[in-house]
Length: 157
Image 1 (cartoon, rainbow, N blue to C red):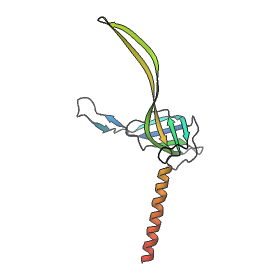
Image 2 (cartoon, rainbow, N blue to C red):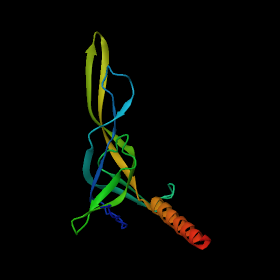
Image 3 (tube, one colour):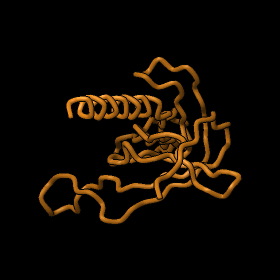
């Protein structure tokens, strides 16, 4: 059964889920490159920020979610729960964004007469998702083309 879409605005703090097969680096010693994970990963979190009427491509709204969007998750569905108990597609994951770095600690020590200062930062990776309006429009266009094609073929017979 195909997943249904959720077209309303997801509010801040709304629970969301994403799953997919992110790209993972190969183990050291193997041929360098990227391989696709054979295990699906699921991320559960919430809507951290919402932008409405965004001038990014054809998207109307963009969400940041509190889990990272690992390489390879682009195009994965952003799912939300519905009061009926069903999962609905609310958007599409398309990138990851680092949100600020906070200095959490400094360590100073002497290394053979050389002063070394190490700083520790806490950074946040956030997933970025957007609505699927451009994809809905493409679907409508394909349906219209299909109907016109069928109409032309029936007139030719």
